[in-house]
Length: 365
Image 1 (cartoon, rainbow, N blue to C red):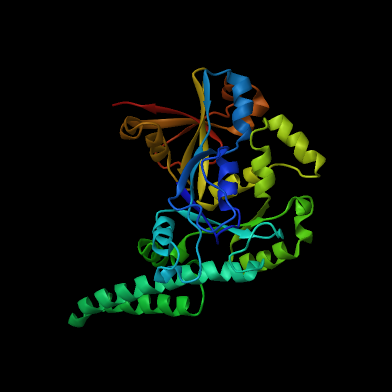
Image 2: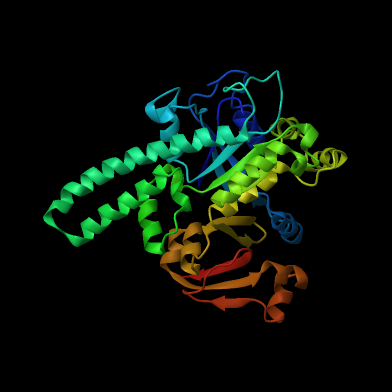
């Protein structure tokens, strides 16, 4: 799964990306468009359960779930018409499954702002409008193409044209496509259009170190929270510079440092977990002496589909899944004890996997 990190130039996208990936792969500079081609990084999903299972099984290796992040070039007003790196930027967003929209929520006279002042509402509006304009252009082309097919009077095609027009009307009112009240069938159709504004969004309020302990006291954060609430989007606060400065510390050192600042937990960990949830993803686990591993699947995946994540033969020859809930395993102390208490279940092809299921697949090919 890919998440595109977007925002105006100089809002801290590349700094955040470097902190996320614990690298210096993305250039961070005090001028617009220091990022041109998207930087790509694979980030592990924090999962305390793996640490517990590692102590229990003492495996040869531990493999966490991962998410792919793209640091995409900054957007400016007029991008949908090709201004700045607009067309390239928009194409890169279209390749993403979801959007992390970084918004500057700090004052610093040493870091220029592309519009001359810090303005979360104006910055957010600029980005959202450019995405909306791009979607309207796409919908217009689709209406024109589908309209030609509708000349024969096919009711299904005529209904499609009318629905496309309703999407355009919603966009022209300044609303992203993801805020439309749609049926499951309509939502599936909208998703097939690959509209930029249909992608789920997390707003990342990039705050100063002075606000890290009490972000709710920051006026800029409150403005952005109101915007996110109206859209039904998530918002988290993160101090990109602080996270980058502490990225090279080990977990214990980092936690101690953040604790001294009155902060519990890393903003990056919160962002990664929120991103994982935003995409509707969960993890099932496998555990043994060779490997403890988290496997990424979509919510609602049935047992054979989960087995296929490990190997196609597992899905093709699926017999059953032997499952124990993580909490039950930890409460019992060992797999054998959980089995003796009847907590290891045998599930068939219709079983819907749950987050934290510790699973052994039985198959025959």
